[in-house]
Length: 242
Image (cartoon, rainbow, N blue to C red):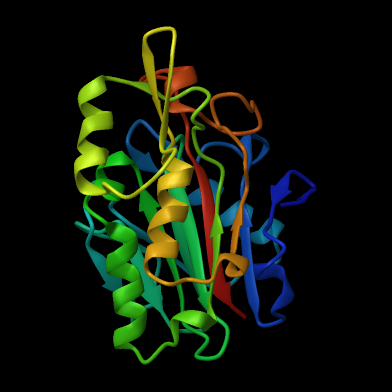
């Protein structure tokens, strides 16, 4: 995932001329302030990646597993959703995060694209399974779906209560190495769980690219855990068709 002018992109998604995507850093400012979406900063970021006229659609991000199919490209927030899916050109889909896992999806043949916000709650509710099923309902071949997993808190920093580890062990009993124990603390690996979810849905491993960036460790990105609830900003992961 290369960095160019303080913008992160995925190699696998960058190979499609009609598709654009990008992940912002702190240099572009926070995309959410005091629980309010900062559409001004979002628009500036879109202009930074030469997307000036496209409407940006966001989910409310309520830590659920609801996926919305977008048909209206005007700028807005869709209530009650953590995942977005569309085939519309001139439309940007966006996910705001500060430690949770942002995922960007693209079907290279059907040209359907999507975005998902996956915190531990969304992962436990199998939101990735839900969006893959929605791709299938639209006639997509799973083998054609390309996925980028953006910066999020890593297993190195995400210490949690033991009962959260046990929750994921109950839901995904066959998953290996999704946590580690160190000095009597438990550390959950959200990024690994996301990859396991994708592989379980038969997404080819070679179609998946992970940023391998921990937001808590990397000051280029906002981190809810590092900065605290009152001060943490949000960065955006966007995807769309020209």
